[in-house]
Amino acid sequence: MAFRTIIEPFRIKSIETIKTTTPEERRKAIAAAGYNVFLLPAADVLIDLLTDSGTGAMSSAQWGALLQGDESYAGSRSFYRFRDAVKDLTGFQHIIPTHQGRAAERILFHTILGRGDVVPNNNHFDTTRANIEVEGAEARDLVIAEGRVPSLLHPFKGNIDLAALEESLVKDGDRIPVVMVTVTNNSGGGQPVSLENLRGVRALCDRFMKPFFLDACRFAENAYFIKLREKGQAHRTPKEIAQEMFSLADGCTMSAKKDGLANIGGFLAMNDDAWAEEARNLLILTEGFPTYGGLAGYDLEAIARGLEEVVEEPYLHYRIRSIEYLAEKLESGGVPMIRPPGGHAVYLDARALLPHIPPLQYPGIALVNALYEVAGVRGVEIGTVMFGLHPDGSEHPGPMDLVRLAFPRRVYTQSHVDYVAEAVLEVARNAAALPGYRITEAPRALRHFTARFQPLGS
Ligand code: F0G
Image (cartoon, rainbow, N blue to C red; front, side, top):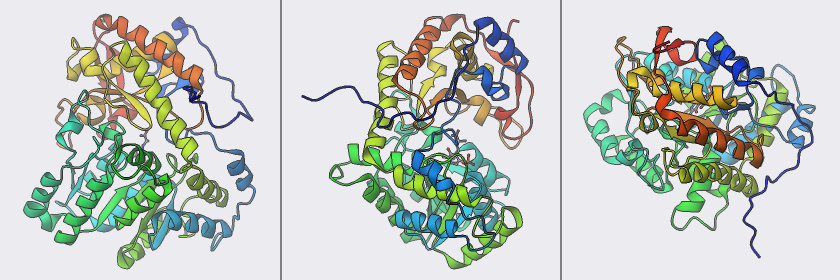
């Protein structure tokens, strides 16, 4: 007999109590936070789906590995353990540790970009975009058309539009120092990219003699989707598929806070000797010596072990299935969202759920705040607040107005997911009554982290 219930493939050894608050306490807390959930004390959150980044639970093997950390400044044993784990997976020549993903981005882009350059990608994540724009370059999003429409079904909605990439390479080739693809495509809904698409990018990069880098934060989830959905891949292990993904690229940026199963860390990896030398010089200036790059020896141990655990199939099965399970519950209640669900999160379509709130009154913020007030669940807006402010200071609707419910890895159980489903359905029933918002203060870049809001009509 086949069992339907997907159990968590682990048992719990240590727990952390979470605090229930009353709706009245939450209304006060969110007002004090300027209606921006980034400014809430985490202790006032019951279920925290703000991000899957750095929020995962480490295994007992990882905690054990921490004690093996070699804290030597140079040439630490933990660095070699880390380097070998990354090399085994990626095959890249140069492995440069950084304190997290954006540090790898900053070092790569500062090393290779000049003013007026263009970086194509399926969709840039916010820090990736910001690190490109700060160099005076353009971050160009070229995801396939299906990837821009939340309700359209497609197995690889994260694919880059190869025709559009070719057009960019023909027209702007001399201004393109690198082509990137983000796996999975976080800003586009955590959607996977197929091996076929990555091979297409490789072929174009060969033709135009351009290096190809992966933003590899969620490479294992992407590999598992390939196993499930791409023809001829079902018999392979997620690790073998991941190794092929990396073999098609010339380098990668990585946040180990996601599929490194660690609470901090990242790396920049590549084959090009000259770029690697420049990157290491900048690393020494801003992160640290090349054998630790802003990390403790014990962090390097935790990441090395995490990279081995993350490609285990029972884990990936549970991971992908939990997100799908939530999506199924919400879909049966008619809640609009990006379909199919992504690997690390469900992305609610706030623009469709709240048609009475125009994008410039931030429907994503309205939905995020309602989820917090009603149930103590913290999600995050990925929409007009995050992407609507352009470098010239003008404001436009973002490509979509989404609310991401991102699941920390190995942290929440099925009953937590059931509770979240109830919360979203409750908020959706009363959606017509939710107000829009206006911004009362905001910085000029990455405003979503610290902006303050006021509900309209209050
Ligand atoms: N690239 C992608 C696709 C990401 O999702 C992130 C982080 C980064 C790069 C930067 O990595 O945080 O280690 O500096 N995403 C987190 C999120 C913050 O919530 O999606 P980092």
